[in-house]
Length: 456
Image (cartoon, rainbow, N blue to C red; front, side, top):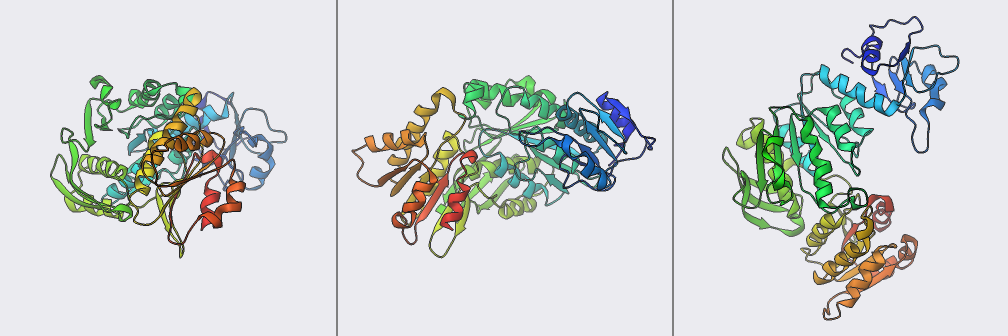
């Protein structure tokens, strides 16, 4: 890894280096926090996790040929160099920043309440038509995942697209300070992580901190239809591109033809021209992801064909509006995460299906004191959408079920409630029917991916 030597790393960390006579100018071959993935010549950082303490794996990484270790306590019988630091997580971020500064690469950072991952996939699909692009894998968007993604960047990569997920104040500063983005993309501000961020204003404040560490000549690409994002002051970003459905935006959609679960066709008016798009991923919210990708494509100099091809090739990620077709059912797997904004979007998508519709809705996490009210709102919203069968599962979802049942003036649709997944499994084959289109959605912590697998 370029310039990642014991000498340079010790200088960046300010830790206590015990070199064991090793070459301090030798570059490590890779950086890992998982003893199972360490390779010969690599650096192991002993992170203390909720369940596992990396300090207990010193002998294993040494046996695998690790070159050096970053640790908070001196290892016994250490036969390889180590740097002693106060906080290994902080060291992980500092080393990622050191490595990032060695590279001649453009960094695009993406945040928002909903749609970060899918927007990342759209932008990566577009920019890959012209550039060598690295993107965040899976859910590596937090204080551990982001630096590990930066370490994956190679000299040949031209653009890195980094997703940034937070749920508390102070986290975005650490992520953005590490990545130092050239372009910031903000999808929207919604009711998420209210338990820690308090309000929409708190969500905006926390997420917009990324702009404090953006390249001074950088560009903010943001949803111009989002009233909260429009309040970001101009000095925060020298250059701004607004996208949305409203024609007042710099990049906007027109002639939208929704085709249900088959996707959407639309004409997008960009700053450099028009783009005729087929968005294979269904739902109106996917148009916003495409608009962000068109904005990024134009910013990085792609032509019309490259942008159109990139949008048409964009694919979904498991757990995020992922359509699964079996011999018996059509499943909308959207169980990676949930908040009121994404829950309503998923219900809207389900309502476009031409078959009998079933929504299996679970709890939404981290909503704080507003949790009861926001679940009630979702129950009412789902009932008004005339979904044929509403199935609520979980402790907080009981409030959604009760609110839905109170709308007795709506005749269409049946409502069922189960306190846990196991109760639902007992009745699953009884309540589901051949050719149903089934939405499965809840916050990731509640493990609704297991329901998807059961239905499959």
